[in-house]
Image (cartoon, rainbow, N blue to C red; front, side, top):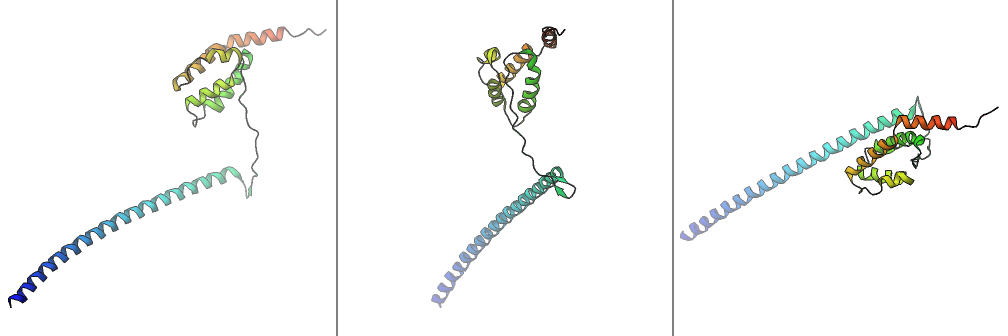
Length: 172
């Protein structure tokens, strides 16, 4: 009988170990299940968000490209070129407005890129005015304000226009 007790005693020990192992396995499976469920929930939420955005973009696209029940054909517009400015004061307003609308108002461009566009858009003495400024975020504003202060003078612009009018040949 001692032998049976010995075997029974060790069997009980194995049962306890086995139960503990099953409990650990169950906890691991439960934890993995919860992590996978959370990951799937995040993926579903992200998919819904993307579909909502795509749907909103599609509606926006349709609103801007539909005309009644007919689609308006897309028209390829010519590329808008940034005018070059060489210092002629009567041309500054056009340069200023175009550069402002195409470059400065473009939020996709940082100030360093805007500075590069500015440097490539000016010539002659205007380029000499700003060429020695280091190309940095802060210096774009310094360069732009320098040009505006130098060439956006309403009185000088008006005087230049009057001078050009007075220099027209007299017609008899």
